[in-house]
Length: 238
Image (cartoon, rainbow, N blue to C red):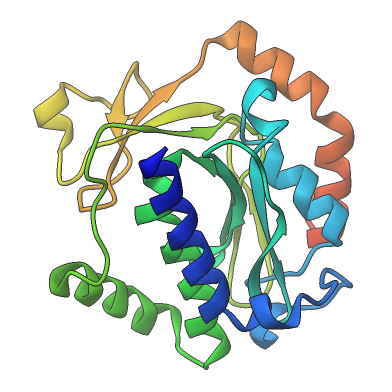
């Protein structure tokens, strides 16, 4: 219970610091966030559905959902469990993720504050430097215990500085916190049973799900995929 109160205290603090928390605007009425082609705004209902697609049903039904509107990230729905779902957009890498209590405390702030830095006019390179410095200074903290983040959605897109959209190969997976671990540490090989997404305080051990489960997820998500790709302007290559 105490951990849950701590997590919600962190969420409330982020919410208060975010201009979005004060505005509570409807958002998602099309256009771009911070005038950036890399940060398209989605219709609010669509963003909620996309964010929740990251989690298994038994988690998503009661998870908190964050959405991006013109002022930044804001809570669209307060859930009853410790999980928080969001559509991350850092540096134009758009994907839904659902954090457990530890990820909500330690890593969700990177998305929330990335949006505020972007809104203030900071470049992607400047934001990455700020994130690195905040980890060094202790303002940001690596996960302090083992935990999980879900990325079960088959949707992930790269959006360049001109708004060009590329679809990333479908790879629904689980992520386990692995601060500063390397593939050598875990016997990881990219694309295999387990591997590191990156080396750093926010590094994750990636565990892809099985082909049968992946096929079922992709099949169930076809309508949502079509809606998202229309909203972000994705054009499949011919």
